[in-house]
Length: 544
Image 1 (cartoon, rainbow, N blue to C red):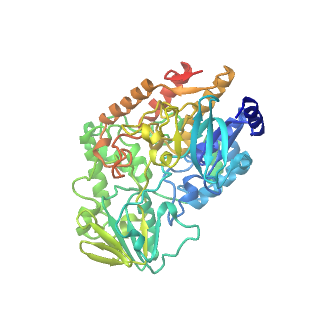
Image 2: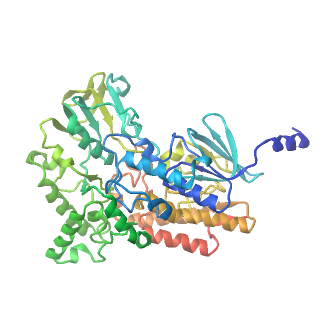
Image 3: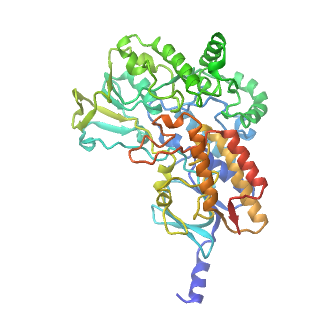
């Protein structure tokens, strides 16, 4: 193409946007709102038909958030002033309504392209911009790409022989149909007892003719202490919301009302320690995990004290002592809290029901799925419905579904073969002008969604604004900075008990995935590093 022809072709193309955001969960929504406020031209691309991210897709029976209200919502007054919740831990239906409310208040949909799955993005060195491709064949150009995919965008479907042969109904919890298939009176099998497994098991046990639970590792779940909320109570509480949201930005847990005791658990008098445990237990939610003693995840002796308290509390709810070792074993299956604790309401009482059986897949492995059920070493369990509650390929899995190509010609996944490399969990070497949020090597799993969207998200907004003021067109992470950040994550992991659990924190739930700490667990330290980086002019990044 001649130079003149090239210029003519360029003139017929739409002007490049300042930014394309991928994903309409809390992070994507906040970025769209804030970047528009700062005068940037921006478009958000979302594969689903509506806002909500994971809450659009997670529609299985019992799906609800594990962060309590009002921690789990935006701090913007224009949103919370006339919004009231019905439960302390809202379900997926109410969260979808919340996102509709946010959309209406902030007028977001006019800049969102729904039903648009991004499949590829490649950086153009000459133009200093990204070309983004979608499943429909559409391409768009933007100076910056901001992936807000979240950590649970790719469901893990285990490789079980015969899965496709099953003639009944089979769904992964993350792919639950909008039509909501009925479980009433059916023979249901649930594979997996992680967070989604706990929730779907509680609901299924109420209505199923028979429920068989296939468990690999017992879930060290904590009491949710769910309760209904009324409008009058919330209106009174809203007088304190500005202060509560301010405190939310200062606690390590990112919950305004959960702060850990700075003492070592094993050094505290037994009576005082038990009183601390008991008080946190009664509060429910993550209080027993994040609101007791700060050395729970770093000191094996203190961790064991937490586990023993959990075990005895849990066994008191199980009628059949023969299930003690399966559900709350004498020896911990892994250090307490080194897998994210699930929250439950009636989970352990389920095992007291006559219509519920538990299969330990470590001692009685699943051999295959047949057209009529699941065959284990003990025989076949005939089923009408199979529910795969087998979790997610977290953090890197969602990004792997997009062919992101950097300046070295490699995909992001290829570049991470020998370990994830980012700076601040935001920038990636060889990927200029790509700034990811709520992803690998940032707090993510240790920082609830709306809080992290605001705190981490402001770094990106401020960075793009500063670059515009200085007429800078490009920002790129150095390989050296990413190597240092990766080493920091490794050092932090080695200071804790986290590597001792086969958790999705470590990528250990996915066969063949490299084992490494995927998330930065020290939230306030991370945020101070981000503020310091901004104040110093973004060291570790090359701006030009």
